[in-house]
Image (tube, rainbow, N blue to C red; front, side, top):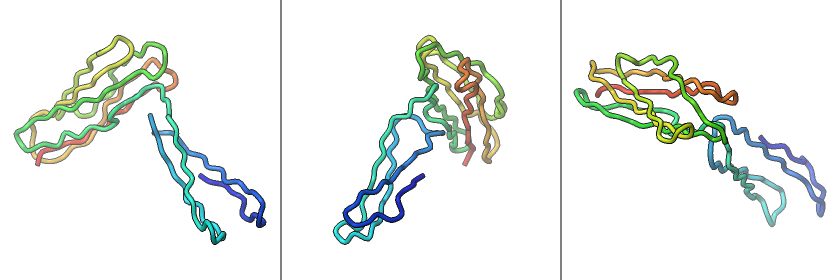
Length: 153
């Protein structure tokens, strides 16, 4: 979102304020805004905003795709890391694909890092979509929702 001085007299200064909504982002972000002017020596220029968004819990990747050929199986891994300086605990919640996908939660580093392994199960042709909810002990992010998509071609 941008706000700016609409008119700036020649030889004067003006301001352009940029704000970036960081909800849904994690890690490094890079955003740009193009500014158009009526100054013949600089008709356009680009403003850049670079930031590192620190989140309570890092989930990478946030979504899983398990699409394979009929009769095959595939496993995908989601890594979950504590972004704060206190132990993270995960508790399995709702899972909507129990007939199509199995999952296993592995604690890789006590209270700091987990891996969730999703494996497709044999089934009829077609696609499916669902979620895995994981409850956390962090009030900043009480629930992690991992979207799972897949199917057989």
